[in-house]
Image (tube, rainbow, N blue to C red):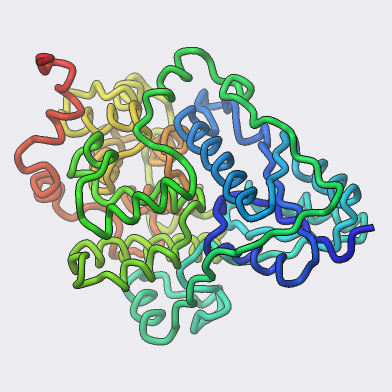
Length: 434
């Protein structure tokens, strides 16, 4: 019988660096059972005709899981990868390896927390505990100067209070050794994109992806950002796409702590204050939305959200919505951004705000339609950031003074002053091949 074995259930935390559940399991148990489960509920088509996880994010996930397995094996560990419902598989694995507890990182959106609840109930029937950790935010919930129910709704107030009254915890580093149970078996291959339900055309699109998932690629991109030098990804995507760290942060290949402490270490040395400020601002907004989801639950998934007056926009998937999805609206900047999204699963933050504004204000359509389409297409999709940002553009966000775009023309001009972005993503097919 294994003594004090802990099962570590990986979800959106696909890294060994600064991973609290992995560190805690190593410190508290003799043996660790790392597990990743491909849940079929996260793939396939929904009733609205959109996919829960598009092929570009699915490819990124597969690469991230593969890279995690490689990293664990390099430290004497491994990763058991399987497919099915976690609430059915985890209790059986816990019994098989005689585990003491199951560790995982807590999520905040309803679907993800419901799965955790199902797992918790199934484990409890075996008298086992599912221990929750908080490892997705820059600021730890237990360190906040207020309880969740009293978190300020205004982002500026939230930011001032936490920066003044709360410290950011240090990064945990990388464990040297991971010890598996003697009878640990992990010879399963990862599922293929076809196994996950994707067809030939979708897989062809994935093969052309500019992004590579995994902690190794994440560290390379972070180093390129710190050096503020061109890298392979920025060459493919263009300089107007920003630092492009969000896909790896969303999948947990990079922790917010690792990004923050690296940025602060090199600020004013190799990294400009402007770039450092932009990165940290993004991390703070990400924290804000996660805490708002924790505070308000499903309110972000409603049409009116936090608006004091009813929001009347069509929830129907009209021909105009189809044109918006395809990048065929006739608005060059909107069309360029949507084609970038469809081709590579990413677009800059400013472009996201502009296409969202166009959908809700020019087309008069519900922001929930756009948010659902982004959920399908974005590699860096996260429920709280995605639906939180869409709510703000639609005038239904929780930080009321941040709702909407104050000057659309000014934002458009600042984002693509010379039209380079439009040329790259809308007209590139017309550029002669040299």
